[in-house]
Image (cartoon, rainbow, N blue to C red; front, side, top):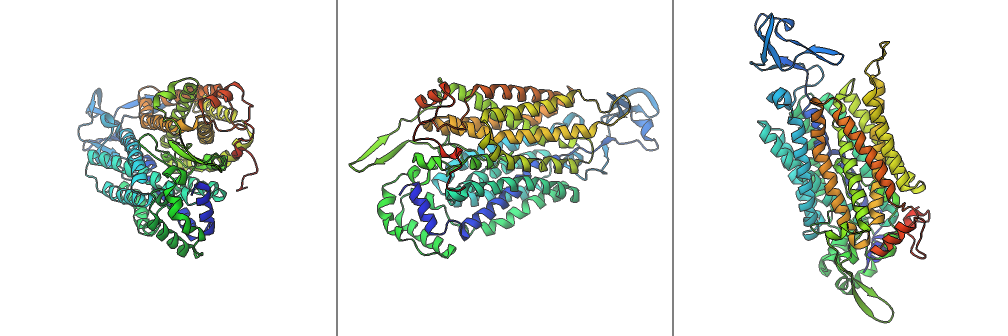
Length: 602
């Protein structure tokens, strides 16, 4: 029973019945709330305006020296006069700080005085969360294959609820950072384990649309976060409001079934038959007649032939996308690839890649021949011509992750209301995510990716040289905000094209390793992004300048790759060489239909 036969079995069970709808709703629910823990650092660790505690009987202008930062004059946040009223000598704050809570309520910064010499607290906690997410994806990627999708995502959600709730009761910064690491671990683990089931229960006709729903839900969740943060002005209660819906949802998700493809891949006929009967009951459909063939078919197929989703230590990727059957690969549409959502970004980003074929069974009319495809190593990613693909795609993923989080974590620096700015920052992602899959169907991948990075770089460059006000006193802060939002729009738009290039350029046996490597590199970009923003305290506009340079490099380097909009996915290195030599080459009889308009789901 291959992947196509599993799809036929799902059709007999109702291709979009109660089971699929339940997974779709739960997936959207999870993607709405889970990423908020990572993104909420903008509010949990926001820094209110502050100054040293005033000595009794003295006014602010008598106790605090004035500092000039460019055209802005303000009272010092970290120093005070040794003798109030005498501007001769200053010293660091001796009695603590007073905080202005007009904009932000109680945050970890104001509660634990993480300012001045300790002002890297927010950046550190965010980077630690990203490290936890990287490890969580690795561990639960293996767990989901070994123990099953259902127990993996249930354990991950339970851990997320546990750590997220414990985070509310942190008594110091060390405890807070430690629990943020655990939250990042469980957050990414949930995305990895849960995304497998939703993909594997959808047939190609519905899969692309189904994967689009969580992606859009992610952006709407970020907008909802801005509203929650505005209404809940205490970081502990805000964190509790974020994690509570997941805790409640855990009990509803307990009734979700195991992945049918995973159960079949394990060759357990009795368990497979029971699950099919359960699915038929849940979908209110008849038990398929093909269930009688399971005893023979299950034993004749390996995990990949059935599910198309084998994972190992170097394969932390999106399942259900590519099978060992080339025709199944061709059924995955460009829309599906572009619309899979980022999770830890994106604190919670999904990885898209191709199939891994360790071995497969080639059945024909005359005989059964077991054919083994050689297992490639990571070193093969650094051999020509794959080396070019590896270097470019890793650079693109690194650039995207660093710039995306650079925008996401710096909304509090924009002029105006930080809650409104964050809402708009999330809002611009929606049209980018909706437009991306359709734009990449009609425009050359490399051209559109390059344009997106160049447009992002152009907006950032203008921000660098644009003054806050003109010589006539016209305020340009709104224009700066708009340019920043446009930059985020284009960086989100670029993501779909980068994922497509990874899927469509790596040879089949290297595709998982190539995507896994690019994903790890992208996580490094997310980890160092907070510290890039921190360096703005020492070098004005450092982060903006660096993001501009990286975006320009990405825009140029992507043009060294061939365009893949009308080419077949390479099965071997030799086919990749042919694509490199002729960008317009199409393998007769093996054209990838995901770039045409005759898909079964259109």
